[in-house]
Length: 82
Image (cartoon, rainbow, N blue to C red; front, side, top):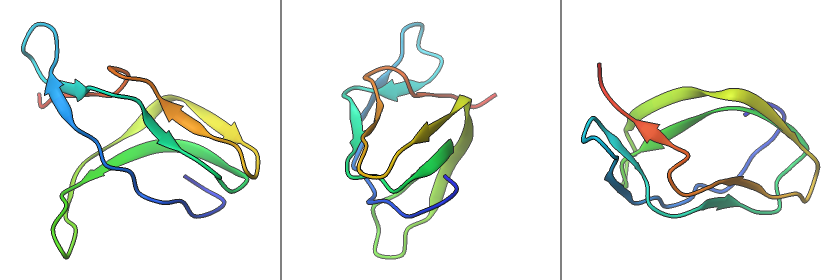
């Protein structure tokens, strides 16, 4: 994201169809966003000193206004290696 800050959200993952990776099993909702352009996502572990596990760009960037919501619908985030 460029242009502001946000609150991290918890996400749970489930095996994707075909068994080649995982995807989010519920909506991921960011509320009360700053005016910004979301260009990608990052996945961190939940330890005291978070470690980035995965990152990638969105298919298309998304511009949101101040106070808007940004949502990644269930199964929209697909993670795989290879």
